[in-house]
Length: 438
Image (cartoon, rainbow, N blue to C red; front, side, top):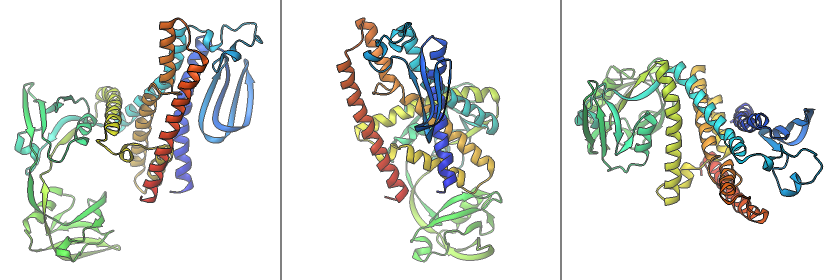
């Protein structure tokens, strides 16, 4: 990954953090809090100016942001007697006002995620949990799913977005059934079940990395067992046709491979810019019959608005479920946990990937929405020093009628800080493992 990709990745994260701190800042000013400093980025100060008693500055390291309030750190600070009017000090403001200031940082992240989804869905369309159609030799076809059927529930979970359905699939075992509650196009209801089963199929024994605008696809990897252990295809080949069936007609292409039934057939590829006809034999694999769930797309602006909010909620649900399964041992932490290095790497890869501009814009909008919603939700968790912990302490203060002692708060903060640092180091370790192929 090059310098430009890294820089854009860092700037992406910084924008989200600036948005977060801006939420705290704007509501604090509106509700009468005394703000002492608003900083963009971190580290030593590069530029600084003062207006209305607030220091505004830009710092050296291009990541992050922060806002500071008078009296938000300890009792000595806001009771030092240097200000005649201390009503604007953080802990002298009403609890309800403090709660609003705390929650508006995460809320603005969530809202910016919704907005990114809205821009993406209204510009590119959005898939909805309605069946677009089914293909033969799939579980969906055999179970009786039809075009226009809306999936309402899957294994008891409410399905409002296609991500909800993906969230159910993510945590299924290879042999698990999927019970679907369906609302048909005419408004009636039915329940069907997808029951996994294995079938013998003939395949090329390859994976493809990208489909091209001309209808072909680039071969990514070739199985050593391809062509009876003597691979003919190579990584980088562009698939054109199988026995005359063009790759652009995926159903016909797959059927041509299947119909060869282990006998030699012609495969057309483009290799090093030259089109050539090769002869190979498809390999028999014992595969799981595909689900065959194909969702419909909508270009309705009204649907884009609704789905923007519903997708944001879906991300929160999947995050909660992933955290629960990580702690229960159902999934490995390295499969779900990532840190800033991993996020910057993913954004950088999108920026530097050779693809149409619209695809890059789509992927960046998707990542901005995903990370913004996740950042907003994670900051509401009751873990020091996150906003959620301060909200819990504010609630405890409301019940007790007074704040917890400084000693107790310091102990809570130390435990939380240790946990956050531990998770950050773990995320960094996993990020480095992914980048190095470990």
